Length: 343
Image (cartoon, rainbow, N blue to C red; front, side, top):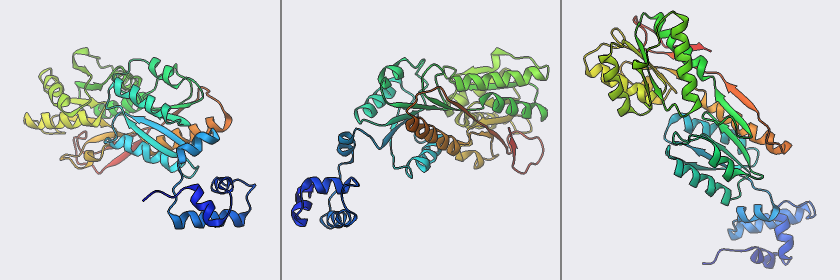
């Protein structure tokens, strides 16, 4: 059965198709009574507007694109929820693409969003993206760009970032205060400024306590669980008694490795992760971690788009979101009730 059209509504109400179109678009040239009649008849007939075509005709899109590395990470799913909480009441829909941490997938996602005439793009770059040249090339023009979490500082638009340095500093200081003396780090993908900032915070915490920064127990490109297991085994061989992990999946691998080697966590080996993934409070022992306030970050990224869009600006606005240290069982050498340390 053919889908009902504007012509079908017009014929049923004995009015012109252009009047129906204006009524459905909320044009003030159409009376309230006519608009209500059109909307009722459209509902009765099961008419569905082609929102993209309508947006293109008006020259205004009500869709915002978002590119995330992985939608199955709690951090990114919470950013999405936070963005929708702001965008949907403002009349915008969110179109989401995943890069799967691959540069080519990120480029494809950007091109898809541009083809769909999105009003703006909110994104966090993949770990394979060494610079923002491809983003600048693809988004050149009227599209509004907002970056979050992983950002390139030389690109236009707003940037919503975590206080990565302070978070890692606080996490490492927490391990030092609990008596750990050879603290390594599973440092994440250092192509990203966010991970480099966490590494700097880790180093600064050690230096503030007069402890040596040893490159032999700094393990870059350690993001996933398997790498966490592999690199933690090396860290233990090199005398580490604790690890600050720049991501929770690496921290999970660290916990599995330490326990597999017969070490008691936290008495013999301490761990702090980053991101507060849902599994961190379900492991035995539960994993201390840094909360990245993802929902708030999504709120702020969406609001930045609305602000830039309403003012028709592409200015360099940077917002820093504070992090929290959530102290659980893997980092305290005495019984602990879960506490939160504000940064």
